[in-house]
Amino acid sequence: QGQRVLSTHESAPLAVVVQDLNKRSNNFMAEQVVRTLGAEIVGRPGTWEKGIEAVARYLANIGVPRGSYGMTNGSGLYDSNHFTAEQITTVLRSASRHFRVSTEFLASLAVAGTDGTIAHRMAGTLAERYVRAKTGTLATVSCLSGFAGSPGRVPLIFSILMNDVASAAEARRAQDRVAELLVA
Image (tube, rainbow, N blue to C red; front, side, top):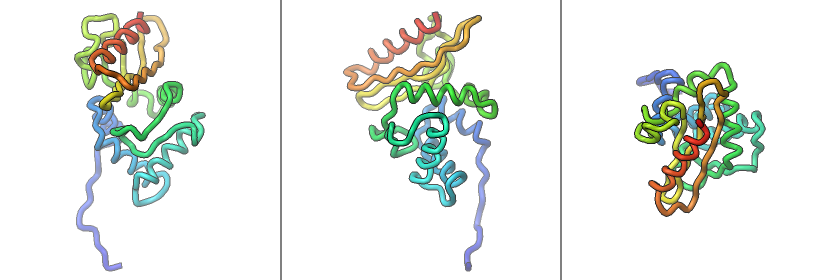
């Protein structure tokens, strides 16, 4: 009542947004996607709380029960989100098997030695171009989760979560070595 629309803007399709979000680890974009999920699934306006509720519904639907993890924001930019490696692999498995999103989701992940946050990692190894993954980094945390494939084999889903790391570079080297072993 008494309000009028001054402007509207249509974002790029979700598949395009998620590609940029995952390849470059765009935290701001992650927050906006969670808020949008909240608006679309729980109701307008989109908020963190509604977005987290939308995510909780999805997670419960794929077998990750409420109360078994901690999530307070959409980006994981600070240490208030807590998931296990098993929960992350459950999400990865679900996304990779969901026909409507699997192709776009897999394409959104960074490719070892090629692009995104792992463009310079695993280059010149067996894992180059055979690992698609998402990184996660905080001051003393370093993570790598995704898929390790190889010719003639079904890709393996993995999640490496390292806390209290003294050296992020050493943590990344260890993660890369594990990814190389999975490809081998």
